[in-house]
Image (cartoon, rainbow, N blue to C red; front, side):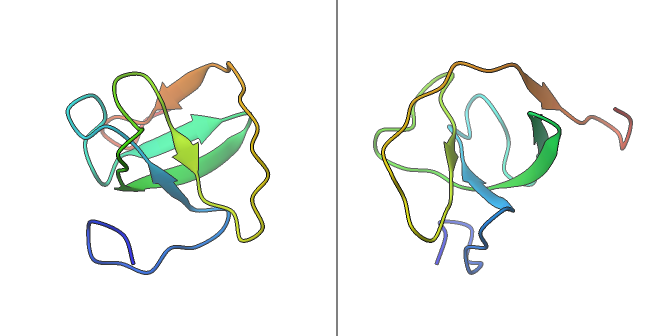
Length: 72
């Protein structure tokens, strides 16, 4: 269960700092779209955590795009 009250979904749910990226934002990372639905204690500032069922600890620096007004 996410902090916004929805069930996490692999390939969809990401955790964000809601002071930087508002909940409900559509985020494009490496050509895939995710939905900002959660936050976490370590997710502060310019960090994003992508939910996966079987996690391995990996850290990447990537470009992130936020969809605004349904335009890319």
